[in-house]
View 1: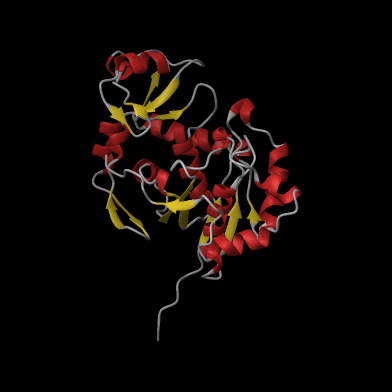
View 2 (view 1 turned 30 degrees about the vertical axis):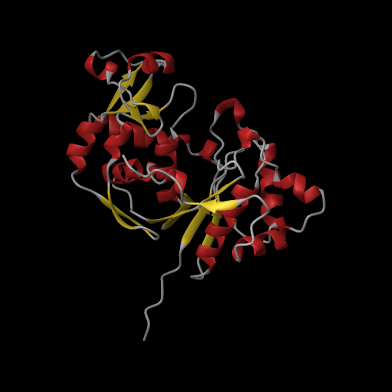
Amino acid sequence: MPRHESPVVTRFAPSPNGPLHLGHAWAAIVAHDRARKSGGTFLLRIEDIDGARSRLDLAAQFRADLAWLGLSWREVTLQSQRIDRYAQAADALRAAGLLYPCRCTRAQIAATATVQGPDGPLYPGTCRRDPVPPGPDVAWRLDMARAMALAGPLAWEDERRGVQHARPEMFGDVVLWRKDAPASYHLAATVDDAADGVNVVTRGIDLFRATHVHRLLQALLGLPVPRWHHHPVLVGPDGRKLAKRRDARGLVERRLAGENGHDIADAFRVGLFDTGLCPSDAIDLSP
């Protein structure tokens, strides 16, 4: 008899710093349908720790948008109510000698970096070589070389691309605890997915390389390892990913204009994307 897949738990985790657009709808539908295919659970997690940019009034708008698309979900705890959990994870890494304080500004890093990483200029290790005292005005960076030596070789599985060998060194000494907000995306998302029981992480291919860091953090913190499903992102006629910062038309605008969200969701499922939009895997995945 064929072996049946265990129930899948996925999540959609938007940040309330602007309205959702069709790219978010696509991501939510992929996660929703991936879970429902196995009789599993689709979670909604509001990632609201982006300082003053986070607006909880948008969370209600997000829920209305998802319902308009015909999706159902179970909502989990807001990130802003999980700060203690992130602090415990950071404390564990600090106690293991894997974090160090850093006072370097982005301008200083840009002026001294000689290598480009996935997120921009690669941190040159200034405060690792010349330590600075801890305090409220520092960020905390992961000593990548030490962390990798401790964790050893690691692998992770993407459902669309197979087994991957973790190469987190491409990010250098990433910030895990920020000056302007609590945990970084890398730390918060990793801790949250484990706490929420997510066993298939669905997200856009533009976040593929971040998974190398998340796999390392799972090993360092003793967290369960999910599978990943990195799906194409929606791009416009200019070939660029839809983004809030480029004023992609919001779902709320479409909803209030009387468009049918169920029809939009069904069109996504059969590949009939809006005119001018298409899914793209054209992302550089090299280190």
